[in-house]
Image 1 (cartoon, helix red, strand yellow):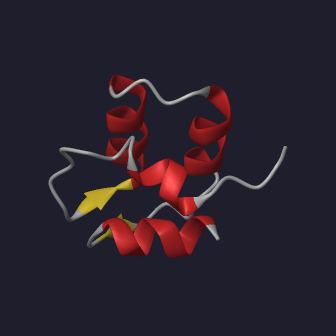
Image 2 (image 1 turned 30 degrees about the vertical axis):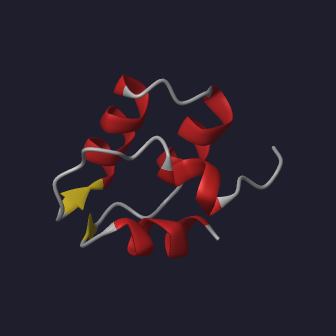
Length: 61
């Protein structure tokens, strides 16, 4: 699996109410049409609560 860009990921996280946990982030990305590579990257982030999009980006990179 190639490395996904945090910028690519952010466009699929629109509309999330933070704080949000991993399951909520993955669900929102699915609802926003994220492809399998993005979804796999999000499913691989630690299962914790994220306070904003920057925290999600840091977890991916």
